[in-house]
Image (tube, rainbow, N blue to C red; front, side, top):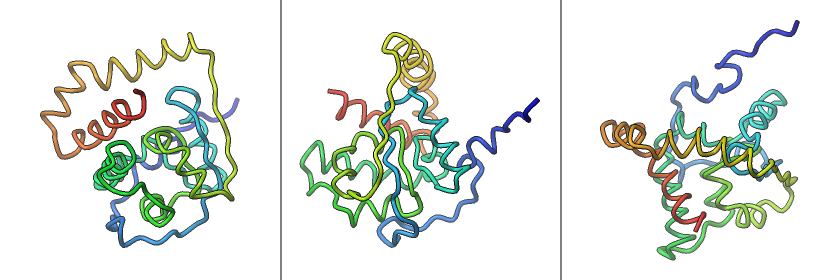
Length: 179
């Protein structure tokens, strides 16, 4: 019988040491190889785990937990793209924000799929899909009720330095991209 994978093996980003470098001071350290375009609850966490096993670090919404201070730059990207408060990000800004990743999947990066395809024309594109009825049930239970329900908002309001910025990024892709 195969060994069960541990939470730390499945989501190493949740256990990563803080080695924060201000995004605007970062340089791309590995090439962007794969843009895995799938909405939350379409297998994006499994794809992230697979990329990590293959040695391709992957940006997923879980990555925000070990990169809390990047939430500000994600908000800048939303402001630029959806509110025209600045020029949309170019490859330079994406290389800064995604410097240590060779793949992306899930939100918030998914909200910028067109920009990322333009920025990284050499990257392979994988489109993730799921049966719509099964997806909606899963999304509603795991995301809508947990993240945007009364307890998720209460926690984000109470703990504004950790959960708050993550909630703010998620609220932006929901407000900007889903409309």
